[in-house]
Each structure stands twice: as structure tokens, then as C-alpha cells.
Amino acid sequence: MPPRWSAALRRATGASLGVARSRTAVQPFPSQRRAISILPWRRNRTPVQPLPVYFASPKTSRPVNWKGPLGRLVFAILAYWVCWEVFSAVVLDPLLDWGEDEWDNLSEKEKEEWGEMADEDGKPYWFLPIPFTTTAVSGPPYKPSDPEWATFVALNKDPKLQREIKETLADIIGRSLQREPSFIRLSGGNQVKLRKLWLDILYPSRPPPKHFIAGIAVLDEGIFLAAKQVDTLSARRLDSALSPTAVALTAWTFVSMLYKQAAVDMMKAVGLGPAAASEQGGPPNAPAPRPKMTTRGIVERVTGASAPDAPADGQVRLDPRVEAASVAAAHTFAKNWRPPKQPPNRGCVRVDGILEYQGKTAILCFYVFAWYDPKLKHFMGIELKLKHISSYGGGRKIGGGGGGRGGGGPW
Image (tube, rainbow, N blue to C red):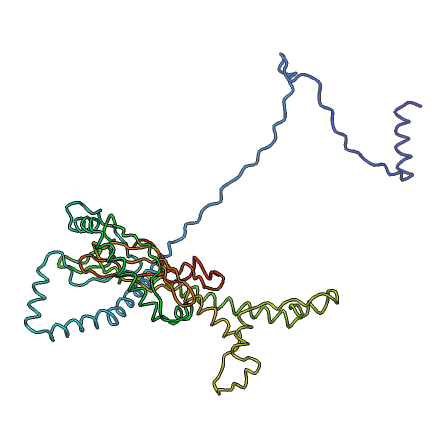
């Protein structure tokens, strides 16, 4: 049978028997012929892959919407106008009316004085200070031609006057101690006498700094931003009012004390307190733990908090937690509060050192800082800081290096 007929017979037999044969895609082998040839009809051309073509979407022009920006602009103008009207009605108009009334109430002589003051160059009619703009400006050092320098030289050459200044300061402090109840109790009476004296007189190289505050000045030419000199004591009072460090620390102590007391009470309520821990574990012969001394316990014993709901004097008592927090806050305030002190005058000398006073039962030693004005012949800004207290019984020392009033820089 010829091969062609046999192949046709096999195809017909397979179709009749229903034999399913899988079809496999055969990848053509790459041609091994060269891509470059001298003859043009024998060159193999590399098929070029089709490249995607992108068409930009047309932009539709939309009309500009001016309603949004225009509405915001109109609203801003109306808001500014309303604020200005309110400010004028509440602040400016009453201020101008008050100024007119005060001017009408002035006499002719006072009006003339105000007119003369207005004629002075550079002096503003009205000055509005700006908070938090106070600055201290140090002056130039003393010169040999200054009168303060001559006073310093004369005082340095007079040992008798120096001894008199030191003894006067010691006498002032001794009389103050005799009137102080706390020192009377520590020394055993109000009879104290000077035991030792170590004082030095120091001459500052420059005058005290001057304080200036920035503000808005109203002049004939217009309104300007200027700086004006203020009193040093007023500047210190203003700084203490704007930066209340002592008040902030006091409030923080009060709140933190209440939080700690609440945390302790919550731990006791859930059985995690010191008492519950001692009951749960530990050897039977172990000594009982010492109770932790807290401010709350002290207040409870002192105020008799065993029956807080029934006070003996009939007065309403605070909760022990609040009272303990109040005591801690008061202690913090007393520790950090420093009232503004009178600054020294120009030409003052500094007197500092150690003074030791003897009482009936103890010896009190202090650090002393003071300013002395040679022109006015009086002391100012006297400060004390307790160094130590030595009792007569066994040479025991109490305190030392802390507490007391005073401290701070040279000014």
C-alpha cells in the first residue's frame, strides 16, 4: 500500500474510533541563518512589534467660578468691619470720652502745664506698654571722673568708717532676730549677742542696670513703636506677675498630691496596697513593715481625722486628701516665692559675709548680703541665709547651708 494511502487510512480509523489527541503548540525554532546577506532576497527581516498609540483626552474649558473667592472676600471685609466697630464702641469711644471729660475738668493752669509738656520734643502724649518686652540694659562702668568713684576711694581709705558700717549692719540684724519668734525659740530666748563677725565691703564696677519696656507711643507726628524706661522695682513686679513660677509650682504640687493620694486609695481598694501585700505573703516571724510616713498621715493625726464627719469645734473640715495637698502646696509656695526687692541706688556698695550670734541654748550663724548707700548713710536690701545652728548640748549642729531668705545674683 502506498504510504500516502496508509496515512489516509490511519486518519480515517482514528476519526471513527473517536480517539482524542491533544494538540500542543509548537514553538518555531529560531532560524540559524544570518540576518545579513549580500543578496537582498535572502535577508531575514526582523518583525517589528506594534507600538501602542495614545491620544490625549481633550480638555474641556470650564468657565471660572468667581462666587467662592468673591464670597470669602466679602465675608472677610464684613468681619473686619464688625470687629472694628465693636473695638471702637467698646474701647476707643469710652477712652476718648474719658479724655475729653478729664480735659474739661482741668483748670487753666493745668491746661497750660499740659501744653508746655506737649511742646517738649520727643515726649509722647500716650504710651501703651507691650507685655513680655521688658529688658535690662547694663550701664557703662564707673569712671575715675564720676562722683561715685571718689566716694568709693574715700570709703576705702577710712577703716574707721568701714568698721562702723559693719557694726551697724550687725546691730540691725541682731535687733531683728530678737523680734523673730522662730529664732527666739531656737536660741532659747530673745537675748542674743554678736559673737563673731566676718564682713567685707565690695565696690561694684558699674551701676545697677536700667529697665526698658517697649510700647506704642502717640506723638504729634503719628504713632510709633518706642521703648520707655521704667522703675526697676516696677519691672520686677511686672515680671513676677507675668511669669508666676511660684504659683505654677504650687498648683502642680497640689494636683500631683491629689493624684498620688487617689492612686494609693485605688490600689488599696483593689487589694494591691502595702497592707494587702503584707497579708498575702512573707514569713510569719518577719517583722511588720514600718508604715510609710506621708503628709496625709500627718494631717490625719494632727487634725483628728478619725471622726471627720463629727468635728468637735463645729467647723466643716476638708477631706484629708485635700488638706494634705493644701499643706504641701503651701510649703512649695513658701519655698519658691520671692517678693520683688528694692534695687540698690547708684553708688551703693555691697556688704556681705558671715555673722555669728550667741543665744542661751544655741549659736546661730548666717550669711549676710546688704547694700549700703554712702550718701544717704542707710542700708537697703538686707538678706539673710541660715548657715547653721550649733546647740550647746554635745556640739550638735542643726541645719547648714540651706533654707532662709536671700540668695540671688549681685543685683
